[in-house]
Length: 267
Image (cartoon, rainbow, N blue to C red; front, side, top):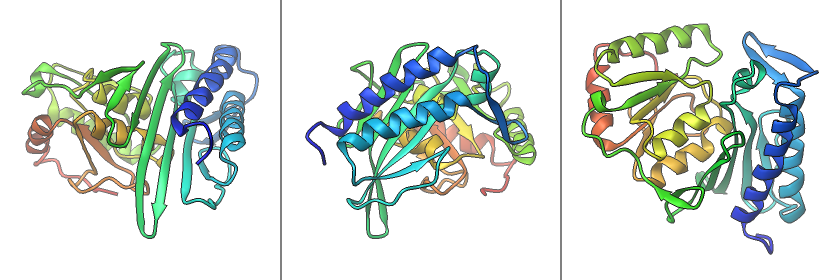
């Protein structure tokens, strides 16, 4: 890799892209639709350019998997997985709950390992980050998943995504859990949903309509914080899957028991 550490470069990219998002926030002029409820703004495009440019200067031979641009092949085995604005609907409607997602993926043969993950909420100035084998941090302080023993003591987060069918399924799952949790939150940002599990704010988070850039950093954040993250059927999460459930092992077991009578399709 380059002279600077991947973490330092990614942190710089988050900070600079965060400034772009703040500058455009509540002052958008160019918005288009990728699908029903699925927006892309001038801020998404500008933020992505800033991130890619900063990373490419230090690691010019690495590949990129990004939300708003075509993927670029790697000559090193490393791929940067980038969501320049997770929570675009929140952003568009003036809600300050959005984030930047940057993950670093190492491909070796058929295996894919996430070695670095960052989720940055620029309005809150909160940077969640993890390096493989080194733990998870929030603004340089170590964090861990919730130590609660039952869901009635926890907030549970989820999102509905851009599929009408999957959105209904999520509401059905929420209904299965209620009132057996302290309370529930629809986040509008999968990135922050997973980060909040990693730091113990949420006991559990689930979603069924995701893309690699939504979850790459969160997978590592949760695991390095002592949690587990699975697909809907309880198997390993993969970047090409659509579903995640993130929690502690104790709370995950309770979640599985509660939804056992409400099985829905994994993909």
